[in-house]
Image 1 (spheres, rainbow, N blue to C red):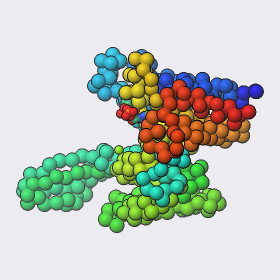
Image 2: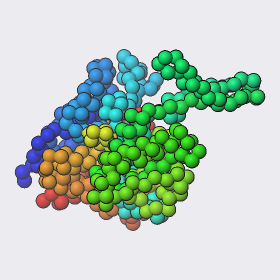
Image 3: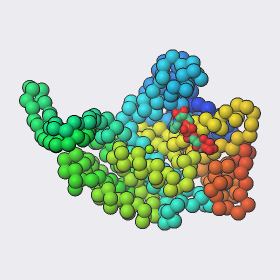
Image 4: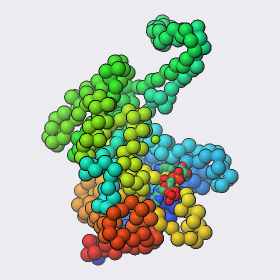
Length: 403
Ligand code: NAP
Ligand code: MG
């Protein structure tokens, strides 16, 4: 069988620990037999990030800007314990943070649904994708404790030194204050990334804030979204048959629970932090969450939402049996191939991506799965297999679909 040809390379970002092991297995078993893989390879494994003083992370982000589509393996974000483990020169920053900042991107997280793994909310039939604004608010706050008898004010000084003041509170007794900010340009990028992704996925977009209480701050988010929608997206949304829907955050939370899923939920930074953990847990398993970073100018980086599965890696190094779930990493690859195929007009590459996903889901629905899924699945006769066996079982089904 002739291998599927590609036109433009994918930006391939390799990573760390057990997911690095999965990465190679996925390429060897599920990709290279079928696709004449064109990729520009960047090794974001921690040893190579350290060797290059993290330049490789920056280079990989620039390559993503150039080519438009990347696929990324999970990577270690170093902490104190990693310094001696890897003999690091510095406690390098999170690669995801670096890449997100360079691409000015928004992260969309969506669960992979399979039969037998039932969401805790029985009405949820389709994925709910959460988009989290990744700049500002409480994550860039300034806070103070305030002793009794103090007056706290907001002071804005313009370039000529003129001050505008507003009383926050006259503290008769002691208390606390917090200063938050956001930037119009960042909110605009977020709005465009969400609207582009909604068009890409042909799904409705929901957005919610607390604008009834926060009449300037949250209202600004609401207004920017509305202005950008009216000026740039309304016609495209109508042509695609999708809707932009704004409501209050409390109403949104209630509607999400009652919904059947199948839309994108754009969240302010804190709401996205909290709600993505809730939605991920309610759908069943973190190892079944995909993640895609989308920039406002339409650059895509696909990855799994989970980390490097360190505990499994140490077992693997000792030669012990592991049962690690490769599904979200496989879907990162399939997402990237599908996008590359769409951009380059390669229907065969898109069809391969669909089959890779179908083979993976079919394997689980036929009862063959990793231990984390077997613990959740209601499929009769389910079998928890090793990492290698799971990969081989997916490979067999893919082979049949590709024949
Ligand atoms: P983790 O790698 O997500 O794993 C936490 C636990 O979740 C695992 O020990 C395992 O539970 C379960 N799990 C996660 N993914 C799984 C999979 N694919 N198959 C089976 N079980 C899975 O999180 P972590 O251990 O907190 O972090 C490890 C490293 O990953 C850290 O260095 C962190 O910086 C990095 N990280 C990277 C990213 C990223 O690159 N996007 C994201 C998060 C974390 P059991 O042990 O109970 O089996
Ligand atoms: Mg969180």
